[in-house]
Length: 625
Image 1 (cartoon, helix red, strand yellow):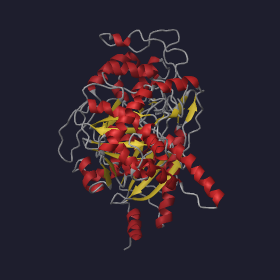
Image 2 (image 1 turned 45 degrees about the vertical axis):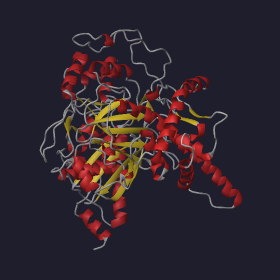
Image 3 (image 1 turned 135 degrees about the horizontal axis):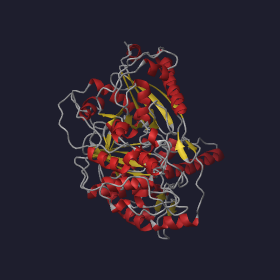
């Protein structure tokens, strides 16, 4: 029996696993075989909308997009194998994390979905972070809920439950109001203290009880029972329900899909990215490079103190993860690649030759960077298309700087742009170094790493840790959630062991060790980078622009897929304090904390901080440019 016949039987007999992920610009469905290799895929492009001052996706768009991606998957299966699947051995749903989806007792959405991208929750996030002694970013669901209470929004008394986008879709498919622990960790902090569990008995996780009690005091009688509003927390491998007849008809109106498919816990895109890069064990991590850039490291022990540069979420098994998120990633590298690509096209047109592909343009440029001066010859690049909270830059400007004595060569230019893309991440990672967090290896993914060599080597130097590339790292979050669905049948082992022994089966394709010459060069570059940061404020002051409208920022072949980052603030400032200076409506703690009193009114015209995300991340995990 040849490979196609074997896969045809696998599909027909329902021995495949289905994964669906709702990213910020694309909904993707992936079907994997018993060896967890993709056999078919489908997708649907979509865009966020800016409605009444907030970024949102309508639930109608969620339904339409899911059906379109699933139908596209079925068409792909039929094209390849001549059959259409009617069932699967397991399935799972993943989506961009955080945001705000409040429902009433009848299951009706009370306000349009407020995505992670909204930056109107600053006052609530600041108060929660101070009271909990834990960094609560603006995009987290609890910050959205607390801000709604602060603003005395009329829908608050009617809330019967809140969830994430993945949780909503999972509930429509299975009837279960649950979240995977990784997704739940971006809704409310999780108690990630070590737990003892036997093989086959996943260690249970739940929201942090102390923080729940403190938050309940702050919300007061406006939210009488916070815990009752939150979905049940499940870890990887736990039963999260099965596809109901109603859910099957919702996803596949043709009636082909049969109910009864087992579902794994719904997860966030950060968790599926960890799975896709084999980075769920302590001392492992991953770096995602796209329009934004972020690093995630699985912790061996809790951080000593909270840091505003670090978010603490969890793996799909509930182990604590520290995340450094930077708003600006590889877009400037992509912009330069387009410039040089156009030059190559023009030269080919003039000479009658053949123009290189965009991949060939990248390869040529990055090869030049590999042989350039270790410190980029005195050049300096800022990739700040948006503000950058990690470095305290509110309004960013892309810049290329050089002194008269700098060595302005093609290689140094490209190396400077790569260093500039990694510089803010390196600054954030220094906080982890200060916490004595040990990392054995980071796995990189994103379109920049389609070109082997320089990007991987320079990232290793910037982070001072080995950087690996896995063959499957580019398969994306839809593949990651399909793997988590398959794990339902393998809970006799830990998720980390399952990934290492069954899914990845050995070492990464290639590992780049940090070379001392590159490390020293990047350190020199970073010193100049820090010293030049005040130039950003001067450049922004001299070139003020109006916040742009957002048209969904579709990706093109030459730059990273948009993972939701605004191009330049993206959203006008939304001041959530009462205009008359009245006290916020969050109830004070039992013993009033001075950090909760006397909050100043935001100055008129203060820009909102650009939102950040786990999408990309993130963030799409596809290897796009």
